[in-house]
Image 1 (tube, rainbow, N blue to C red):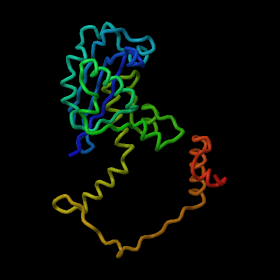
Image 2: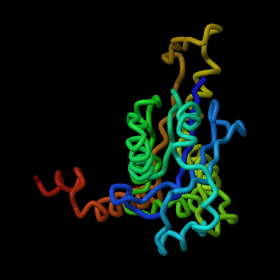
Image 3: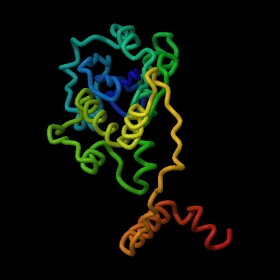
Image 4: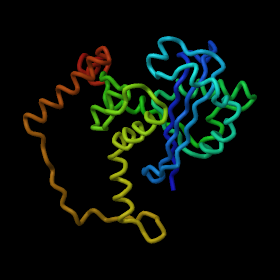
Length: 237
């Protein structure tokens, strides 16, 4: 059974290398692509004040964080929770940069040392929607995920929203897994199916669909600055 942890953080600012710290971490667990309710959530005392711009984003006051645990107090619990799982993070480099810096202060290895893999939904979205806005809010709107309760950034709420976004981004993979499960043998191994007996219809695109396809290719080419493979082939490069 695949265990996935959707993770988000809020921070005092944008630069872990320049001393900014984590003030909130939120995680939700997915088992077989379904939320389990086994969440992990901490507010943390960063031992410094948030930048003014960061306060406008997350709205978590410095005073509120004064009596909260420090990262060192909860590090072992966080590592036990994520151990061996696949982490799903939006703009993973940002969150991992902060988490790795916190672990470095404690003399611990980077977070990737403790997990099976890291999946960056921002990278996935950029591949699926090149040239489009791919913030969490933009993806919620595009994929029909209700984010009406998100007036400020919050790590746990954002992790829950990202879980829904991830499921929507990978829905085609889910359908494939379901189909394989239905034809699998009793021991879970997939059976070979002879497709030679099936006559598969060939559906050609109509004029409207061809025009839509050309429009998408043009958008992708524009976003890449004219560097797409098909454009280079057309001009003989």
